[in-house]
Amino acid sequence: MYSLEYSTQFKKDFKKITKMPISDIIEVGNIISKLQRGEKLDPKNVDHPLTGGWVGFRDCHVKPDLVLIYRIFDDQLQLARIGSHSDLF
Image (cartoon, rainbow, N blue to C red; front, side, top):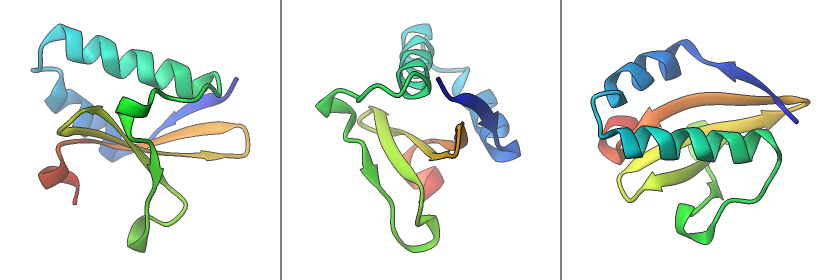
């Protein structure tokens, strides 16, 4: 199991998404739990590596327009950003 590390920006992003329906927040928690346990995500989450300035990071879709950017480094799951495509890219 990976330990969690939250970036300062992730914490700010997360405050914004707390205004979403509770079911979306629960789904974010479920995805983070799966990643923390090292489990593969469902194909619907479209988990894939990033390029450009985000090399080394991955993103997955909680919903079609809610994206989680993260990386696994050593024994840590580092949560970098969460938000819509337009907010993040």
